[in-house]
Image 1 (cartoon, one colour):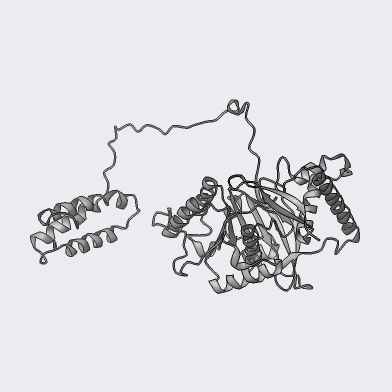
Image 2 (cartoon, rainbow, N blue to C red):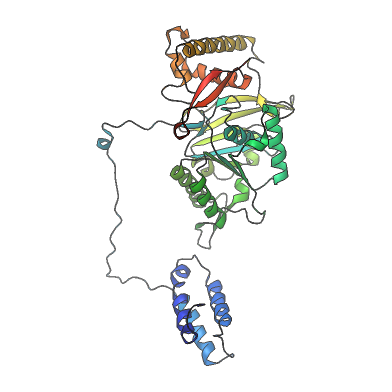
Length: 430
């Protein structure tokens, strides 16, 4: 309209209004909003006239055409069915099956969606901020498991910046790192009235908001390894018990995770029933059924307010049921010392730790490097295959690696040229 000649503005308005018709017909645009906008633009460019006049009639006709129902296709019109693309096992011949990659070993898969639930005040935000800090700072461990490293984003739709800053500085103090020297940790605090990632139109369709589109663009550009969203109640503007809406929303997040190979963790508060039975679930079962992994953090123990338990409630790519005992240290949560309840377990863990360190020393002397992550060349796998392993399995060595990292007895070191960095395990300086 702004660039159309004065005598051609009415025609330009009609053409622009006609372009709105499909959006109105499909329910993407409210007809009343479209009509209001047409009259507003007409008045802005001097096209409106006196009430009941010829010019007003023309504007009314333009508005009526723009909001009229789209004509149905003719009865005899044949619509070609969509093409169904299939895959057969023949196509797999000669190829290696993809291996599951973990951002946090056996807890949070790469390129997929994880649900992390916990009652308000249990420590869910505290523990997930730990994960964000440790990942972005390249510390290599998180509450007893091995993690990857790389850029991370926290979309905080509940807690203000001051609260998250206090958590980060306290967590960094616990690990002896500088909180002002973590360029890979990104935080976003949207306005509390604009936290929705999706909304639902009058036809029940789930629609991405400007915040979702901005998140998509940032992920495509910044390529983070992890995105944490806090929380479902703040970002989902739909019916939490409506199956189609829930599945559509989670499918959008899973597609975003897969397309950009980023792990997305969605925080949630369990329902009253979920709190009572310890399942950690809330609202529709589709919240749990539509994700590949689910973690739950328990409430504080009545007899020990500093104790918590993190449990893997669901894992489509690994074993569920892992329970990790956590304890408040005064600064943040740490893994409870193995063997608190069983001296025999503590002695067994120490024996595995000693074997891990002994084999690591021999590998280092031989010039062999072992990696912290899963797959070929990983420290647990290489040690389990060694004749001096004494029958210790890779799973036990992986648990040992987490304990030794937490204790500061081993460390993860990066080496190689900037274009091809590799990570391996070394003994930490005494």
